[in-house]
Length: 575
Image (cartoon, rainbow, N blue to C red; front, top):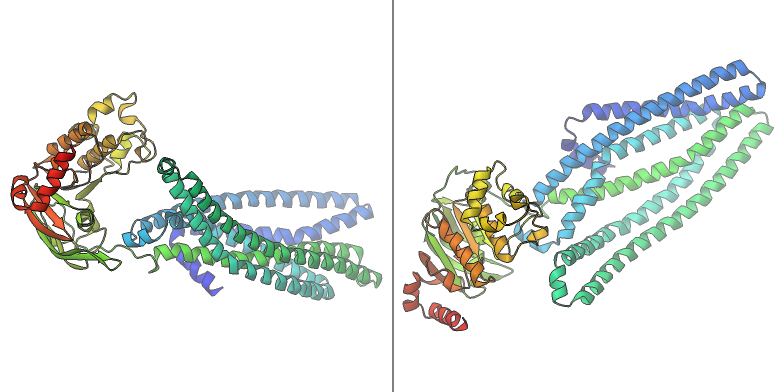
């Protein structure tokens, strides 16, 4: 219970502005509890009046019952309205906060966890936590109702009260063991479900490649194994659950039978009259549900605590490390940056080794080298997707470790070989980086990215939906849309990571023309396997094993860097 209260406090910030609704919920629920307790008394009295042929008083009692029922229905309606609004608002606040924290998690941490981990916690666990007010009030209301019934039994007959308490103790012990056994398997089941969900997501995302690899059978067999394992755990949980429930049913039926025997005994001894016997019978029947309320509350608290641990592991715990940024803000940058003796590696593998170089504002610089030389790593470090192990990276003379997030990523755009395009219209893809984008800015950006002719050929033009991942666009069109996105964002530094390596010559020429449109106005860095695309760069840096072996113009490297010449000659001969 202490852990439950502690977790409830964690959710307090998501209930801002909801205090009046919560108070009203408690007031309405308490009033409904009172009505639930007195209703059996009135009903029993009505039956007695019916047997006595006292029709006038019977009519008055019917009117009272009608009014109470109407009041109960009204309060029940208002309670449900308040609960729905609470659920909606808390869920919204919680999911937004959880999403923000997922976007702050370090790349290494994201790489080591499957996406299913985060999706399960965003959907299932967040949903459970958002129900906390609704469920807690419902459980407390039911408990208060049963407390009221037990108190009423105590007033009416002490012997029946003792019997009811003993029966509840037996049922509670059985329910306690049921929830305890379920908890032991629930955590393992959720982890297995996360793994299955992650694999399902990968299957959907990679469906085209799976078909191309003719690996449908292998993937389905793997998925089948994960689903079967999760289902076996679920079946095991349900089997234990229903075994205990069956035992509880037997105990409840036996208790009901004994309660009738006890009432018959009391009637035969003239300890109670028929009206009181009827009231006690109704109370005893109703009290059986108390065990479910207590059991459900215990199970709910455990389930809530588990979901809370999983959600706040992302929001607060050290299990999912967050990115760290400085506090220095640069409103505008020139685009100069420098690597000073930078070393970086992970998993005991060194990628960059004491790397140093400078790039001036509005300069176009290309990085060349074999796979694994560290080219993409340079881009990731410049965007602070990873932190350097040693050395410094400077932007306009300021260490990026001291800069805030907007000063770094608000001024750098990366265009990869397969940029992610969102399943919205072309216009909305551009507006994602600038909400107040004007139509003039949009058209100009697409013109510079050599995409305007294609867009104008479409029936819906800029309102065309591009499909999930930009499936309705070719590779070159996706890259040009990504370039247009960068131009709309107006970042000072633009990074092209293998942006033309898998394109045909005509599309490559359009991409190259789009890059040339940006030269001398932006700091442009290019990683390219096709050396023909970077011959016009101001400088070319040739990397090998995380170090710069030589740098200069294309002509200079052909004369002074044998390995660069070897790569260039191999490309020429291939063509």
